Image 1 (spheres, one colour):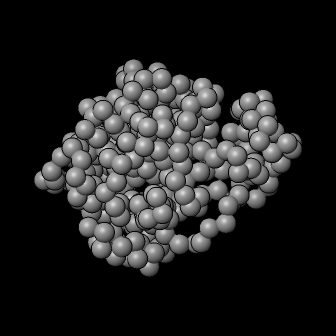
Image 2 (image 1 turned 180 degrees about the vertical axis):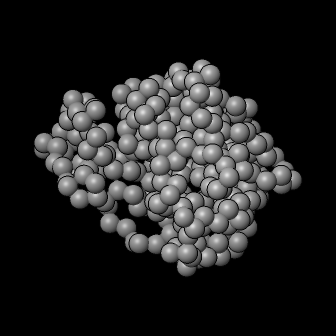
Length: 305
């Protein structure tokens, strides 16, 4: 069985939510669009033939009562005040949390914690982490799992995200050695795009789509310590000399040139998964500034179903 884990969040004026960007980014929040898109994503997952459960991680405690097959709704922690969070050992004991107690509005942290909680609740032998603005073009997860087994891969993910300056500094000694062995040159930094390492040797996983065995999380907790959600999965594999696969194109890494379109990733030269992407996806679902792009995404999602 595969456990699909999907974070969900909306902003409601009368609901408490830890979020720094609440006033600035989501002023025009349209919860109906976010709910609708998430339902379409769930239906798309249900079209896959594998045995499955779908864990809807309700970070904002605003998911409506909707009768959808294979769905288990789990209330996340983003809607809880600090005094309540401090009573939850699984929350307080996460390695990254002590560095974040003064920034409970960090959206990346709450997405990561939703995945972390979901991985602990999952019952499947395999886990897929994915966003609620993604959909599948082909049913090939069984084939991917077979490839993971045959090639001894720890995970298969999409994209290959750049190494932020902060991530590089946290792992400087290791990354210097690893990159120099590959390129025979010292590490070169670019000041563009927030600052990143110029290399095609290493890029990081995220959680747009991330397939692994459930036991992978016995030794690794989904993190945000390295600049974004789940980058630590790649670092864990590099430190332990474990293999993995990142599917392209690599839209989120400026070391590669890609088209400025919806992010569609390929598996064995065929479209596999499309991701709306681009900043906070919930903002794109709900803000008028992104209405054209969101409608284009919805059209493709509907066709995929």
